[in-house]
Length: 554
Image (tube, rainbow, N blue to C red; front, side, top):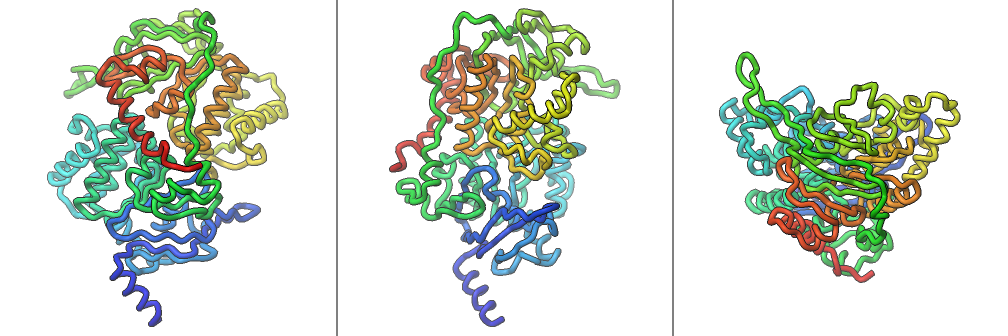
């Protein structure tokens, strides 16, 4: 005991906030044990920013959740290790101790905001609950603090968003709400698990500047979990590289970037989406064409709920995509990108012309749209929210085949699902596992498999690589390009990552507040943007990318 007390005192004097030693995390499955984290040690001092990087499934998020003891115990257990917070042991800690550190001393921004936010509560109620529980604020004071936080994270006109529910916000807006909740109590440590994954590049730069500014003012420490190495280089003093549950390299960020010692680190730093070089047939038939496409959502007020205005999510968009081509859709969060994708698939009510394969489909009834459904697919931005937790992976991928190809035997559906999973880099032997048993990146690949198994002609890809680490991003882009070449697929690729868009798109449209502000070939828009807004997007994206270019001897 005396030795322990000495260590606590030394840790406190040195400013050590989190001290993880030889931590292992395993999960008891039905028939076997999965070793997710194996003997890692990590330290975070007060006011320090530490980065944790690695591929999806490497154990990054599990390590972070273990700090707050948020893993699904007793299914999850620690074969070894210690986690000390301010010198006090968290592994096996009392409920009172864990309650005192969660939210107050340590806050966490989760990777998937749609599943982390309560769909039944407004934004004001969810952020206000944090302030009520931890600071005992009254309603008036809480509302003022909520508006301040929403302003800080870049939510426009926050007064109009207080009564919004999570499903009424874009992916990037939901992520910013999560950041506001995490910062509400000014924690000593902020764990940011892919905090800017769903945020467009201009807001990403603002969020990074915001986190740096808050850190300077409050002395807050940060643990940044990300696959975006530009963020690591910008924010982190030290870096830990994780691979297959272990730390394979750690040290000063600048030194690791300049002289990586481990082969995996060198591969991670060198992985960068390359500009598209192939050129599709410019005379191929028109696959998708829209004219004056509009999606307006009514704003209602008063006792009789009269429409007093509209949210013009998509406001008069014209576009044309030929068969075998890819059109990239970029713009800030809330600009209408996803709404446009949903509209062309007739999943949102809209006005204007939508032609698919030369057929006018605007105004088609549900039954009239059925023959087109297997030809038009979508990969959603939030893979966890779009995958049924009650279905196994095999059932999820097979479901479309059961609807559109009823004559197939069960064994044939199973074989096609296995082939689709293999194409996206997943082991078909895992078909009986459930979505919660996979990492964020693996779940995104399941979503892609569900779309491609039907062999569609046109796919809307809504941020399909945003949850993936850099190495898997490149693999998925190569996969999508290969599938496009072999099957003459047409893509609408929605993304805030312009490096990824450059790697796959032939043409690009830039959206702002529901309108197209720039439209041209990928080369024209990204190398010579004509509008100030497009120029700002390009600058923000490639300035961050430049933080890692030329920084490594590979």
